Image (tube, rainbow, N blue to C red; front, side, top):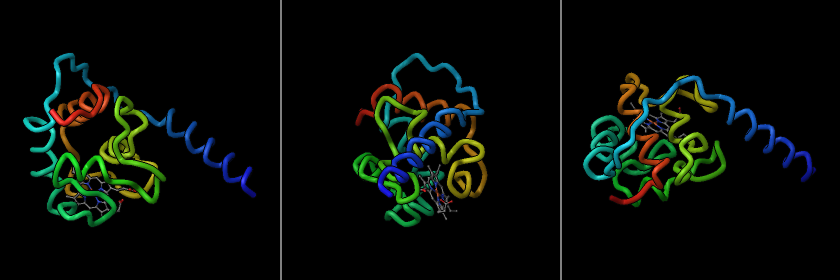
Length: 126
Ligand code: HEC
């Protein structure tokens, strides 16, 4: 039983790695969480996620980093690994679980690229 579960988890992981249809823009400069990322969350996510409702808390750096997903089975942000972060999966087309975020209409390609770059650069509180 335990082995079956592990097998399913590995399959999920593998399929997650190949599920990247969006080519991110190349961002080489350092992305600032406070100047560039929190404003995206505040404007586009806080209306539904400011207090941790709907399985995610977008209200602050600490809250974002502490958010974990019951569906993906781990933290929403995996520092250094945008491809492996459920947060990125949820803002790109065809997420593995439920709807693309924000449900009110997608972020711009540039906003998605910034979030990806911030995570790949270590998801720092900068
Ligand atoms: C109009 C309401 C609304 C807005 C705005 C919104 N969300 Fe959501 N979000 C939801 C709902 C409802 C769910 C639960 C269902 C689902 O996962 O599709 C959810 C779930 C999530 C989850 C948890 C998924 C999981 O399975 O753990 C993440 C992460 C997320 N949203 C990120 C975002 C981000 C990032 C933004 C802004 C860019 C955003 N959401 C904007 C309504 C919203």
